[in-house]
Every structure is written in C-alpha cells, then in structure tokens.
Length: 216
Image (cartoon, rainbow, N blue to C red; front, side, top):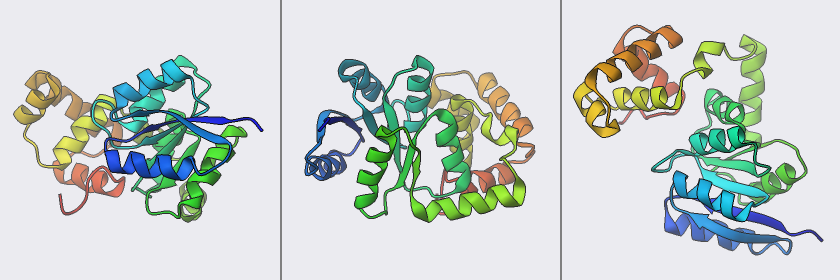
C-alpha cells in the first residue's frame, strides 16, 4: 500500500490539529508537514514534495488561491485540495482555474476530505457534492463563466476585497505597501474587467463571490 503524503496549511492551530488527527487515522496517509500561512505552505511543499496539499482558502501572507497558482506555475506534482467556507460557484471556478484539484467546504462531513484526498491522488477532481449542483446549473444557464470575471490578478482581488470592506484608498495603499495612485489604477482596472462602474456594485459583487459578507 503506497503512503499518501500530505502537508496541511491553515492559520488556525486547532484546525490544523483536527485535520491532522482525521487524516492520520487513515492507514495509508501520513502528514509530513504543517504551515500556518501561504508562504510557509509553499516552502513546505518544496521541502517535502507531498502528494497532497490541503490548504485553507483564507490565509495570511498568501491565500490558498495564490499558493495554488504559484505551485501550478512551478509545475509541481503536488495536488491541491482547497478548504473553504465559500460555496459560490464563481469562487469554486477561481480555485479550479488556479489549479486546485479538490474543493471541500468546511461545513462538509469529515468523510469528504478523505474522498477528496484519494480522488486527487488518483488524478481526479473532487468537489463537495453540495456545490456541484449549483455549479452545473450555472454553466447550463450561462455557459462558461465570462472571462472578465476570472481575469483579475491576485492584487486586484485584494483591492476589491478591501474596497468591499469599506477601506479608504489611503488605507488600502498603506496596508498593501503601494501608492495611492497604484490603488486607484487597480480599482479602475477591476471596474473595467468586471464591467461594474460604482463602488456599491463592487460591494455587491464581492458579497456574491464570497470575498466578504453582507455583515462586513
């Protein structure tokens, strides 16, 4: 029996411990490393070359999607399973487009994570069953997601998220370490690519794709 080697990336120690406990109950799975942020996740994959990276979608440093894109660009053989609280089809689409092979909702039954790990090791794609229906329906209703919705850069997604949270241009610039003019340029590009030309519309879009909540 071949051992499946796994790295876990999540910024919450308790969550990582729970995932490790679950996976190490499986006779053919070994957790070879843990990471508390996105940059560390990349380092751990490089170091251990695991079969699977189980990564939270929201981590400091680099998000799970950014980590996935980075590993895809490096053409590593590690399969990425994303853990997320977001079930919106467009969010799932972004993960798969980035190179993820699995997408598991955090509220799912724990058995789904095992199914995802085993499916990805076999070279298959696994999506939590509760989200596959809406995704298929969305494709049938609209066809493939329009290209402008998936073409934002990681930095533009960050700017969009901060705009949706109500951050000012100056605050966004300070947090990202860029100039106010650069933030304004990113905002203009986001509006153009999404074809949304007011802040209220950007906020509604961010809520719809799971970047923020209506309570934020």
